[in-house]
Amino acid sequence: MRKSDEKHQCDDGDMTRREFVGAGLLGGAAALAGRHGPHLPGLTRAVAAERPGAPAPAPDPFELDEVTISQLQDAMQSGKYTSRQITELYLARIGELDQSGPALNQVLETNPDALAIADALDAERRAQKVRGPLHGIPILLKDNIATADRMTTTAGSLALDGCIAPRDAFVAARLRRAGAVLLGKTNMSEWANFRSTHSTSGWSGRGGQGRNPYVLDRTPSGSSSGSAAATAANFVTAAIGTETDGSVVSPSAACSLVGIKPTLGLVSRTGIVPIAHSQDTAGPIARTVTDAAILLGALAGVDPHDASTASSHGKAHTTYTRFLDVAGLRGARIGVARETFFGYSRVTDALIESAIGVMRDQGAVIVDPANIATAGKWGDSEYEVLLYEFKADLATYFAWLGSAAPMHSLADVIAFNARHADREMPFFGQETMLDAEKKGPLTSAAYRKALAKNHRLTRTEGIDKVMLAHRLDALIAPTQGPPGLIDLVNGDAGGGGSSSPAAVAGYPSITVPAGYAFGLPVGLSFIGRAYTEPTLLRLAYAYEQASTARRAPTFRDVAALPDTGRPRG
Image (cartoon, rainbow, N blue to C red; front, side, top):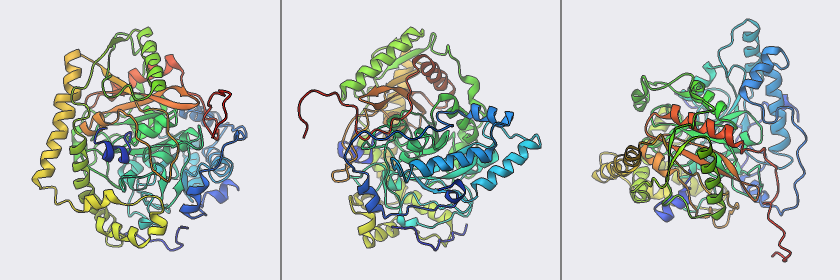
């Protein structure tokens, strides 16, 4: 559906959702700067993603390919580029590859004020006022992060199409204060992949199906799919995603990126379309650990409107790059969470075994196995908690938008989807939403019991227990296997993943590229206890520097399968 010309003015993972429920476990730049929403219906664009494979033509060389935040800062400081020029280059890149060329379909809209913002930041630089490492740097935001500007915030849903937030989300405000150029909103798995038990990751009613820049017929994965795929494709140096269970780390792994899922409370959720306050968090997605660390420093901080952030007082840092150490693995005790999180993919296991060898060569002490004894035992209780909190937290978000919000309750969304099923539900339904709508208030005994079970199994008897027993600095596991095929008929295929322990516990995890299988990215996750981001960043950076695993995307149509000499099909 093409976005309505009339806006609603508002007053004031990975474990995919399907796996979670089913398994119980586990033009020019100036013209582009005003583009809002897709030009084709979601149905048409989604089907268009299923094109047959021939070698994809390589995009034209791009002068900002794989450039880092510090390199952009150096270029602006030397006068090689201005923020405006960088913004124009990224807007042109989006125009070349998002709707044309490989048609990644990952940017829902660009900020019509992006160039004016860049001009203002350039003026500040000329006046010797540089706010910090993000000054003048374009950043993309997931479409569930509210911005009080001329961009909309919809969580990918037509139910919120055209809604402009009354104020910035806390993280958007932090980025503006740090001098970032909010370049646009990315496509995402609609409602953060919490609508159906048979959903296809990367699809939204508003945007259609997004694609993976490494192999175009493969899923970009997780609900922050657009933020990850756009970063991998060099639409920006970094982006912001959100995670409930896997939705930062999963698309980051699928797109060969660094993704940080912070400790619950390190980053505020105010102004973010929610799933569940006991697990939701925003987090950085970038091509390097350094860039992700820079972004985390801008996001972290206490927000009086998000009570969970009170626990971060004295534990948050404004500069996480100071913890990066190329020798950071020397003497570190790394536990391999082998049971449950290995064994589902031969090629994934082989890549992670190689990564373990790299860490051992860098002086790490490898404790293998260091299993999470309770792994897989919280699936039912996690789903129960998310259902209760989704219904309650969504109503709270709509109240935050004010009385002019187009929706006011989960029931309203369900009714909208039913009325517009041809556009909102052409491929999968809303079974998860229907389950959530049946739940009572957060005072319910069943909810409280499930939440307590989650924390006991993932914290006290889970991550805490194994890390204390072995005196570990971190646990490691494959983030997930290689990204599967986009399947709009059957939905996401089942598979393995290690996001749940940290997600349910509210603990931090960081994924970094570990290598490729048939050209498909695989990630390695570092998992720790609450507020151990400095330690995890130190370890992840040392591994990144030693392994040099990441390669730029190839935009292939199909995976690089070997020619066995046998006919296919």
